[in-house]
Length: 454
Ligand code: ADP
Ligand code: ADP
Ligand code: MG
Image (cartoon, rainbow, N blue to C red; front, side, top):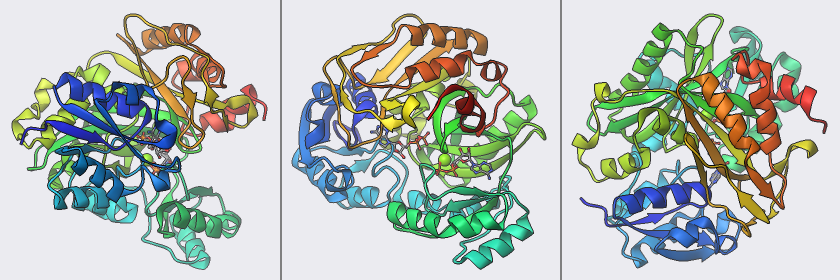
């Protein structure tokens, strides 16, 4: 089925990104927007805008019935969910199926089964993907302490239905479990409607490495290389790069193959990412989860593979398996680094900094890509995620990419609100970052302590 008109169920930079891909393909675009998002780079580009409701996401972007109604009343034939919001909720593809709309993503049943991390671990195990030691759901503190003893401290308590780092904490001993078990469960219940927690062995000094996958829904899957997303704060990524340059070629190949096998075994359709923690000391990797959607950092893989992944999402959703390239046609070349630009104040505990952008002047030039919905005069609303854009740098190798990223950040001017631009610059100039000697805890435990005062 050819897609003629798509409804974009998202906002911000990813809405802009999807509209660009759709227009390249000659597909008409309808964008939903909350009342707070009536004027943005995305609404200015879309062919039509449907105002969904008031600013809070619970009254707009998170209501599947409103999204499907907007799609039907504007004669769309497909829905793209972007990331965040409803993108990993099976209810949206279910409703789309019911009303004859094409959902641009995996099948509802796949989203459902991989959305629970305990279930996802079982699925990964069945495909022989390496796992860290872990448990099933744990309903009380005492059981958590017994299980942690068996696994061995430190352990990581996670929300079974979690995302965005919520409901997660590291426990070094049983006192940590006593102190945090209930609040984590409550946080998970509030955020995901599922308060179930489980335990994993905590890999210390680990890196976060993930593999970008596309599948045809008929048992064939390919990868578009790996990304290292180890510069994190509160389990949220800040800088992502690809390929991961500290892995041995043997481990890299087996990690990529494990990810491909897992997704092929699942008859996975459309795009997804298999996330791993990587232990550089032992050169070992372990499965953590599958993200059943396009990710924030997908441009890293686009830049090193030369493939437009959003266009590929559209093509796969049209149902033609021949659009999936063969693995040997996907050539990974060069190095890309993405910096997430946030409206926040790193000098004041990363407090969000919404408001009017008086001046927005992004850098330009060879190897510089900026994905954003902002412009001079744009009003950053206070209701949503603080990310306002992404700077994506491409160069022949990692050192050249770092140098180019520094120059680009120095030429990026955003006035009127606080941003993390200077912090990104400091990270890129830091010797540990340049030497590739850091872990997922480095930014908050080492770097920020020496650079920023609360
Ligand atoms: P979310 O759904 O919030 O993305 P993840 O399970 O992907 O949660 O974990 C978030 C981050 O926590 C990872 O990017 C990684 O830095 C860290 N992490 C997750 N599992 C482990 C583990 N077993 N050991 C060490 N770090 C981990
Ligand atoms: P990744 O895609 O790398 O897993 P995240 O987990 O940070 O990265 O991406 C999803 C997160 O993005 C959500 O948890 C949410 O906080 C945030 N998010 C959701 N929608 C938007 C949006 N339109 N713009 C920016 N950020 C968003
Ligand atoms: Mg994750």
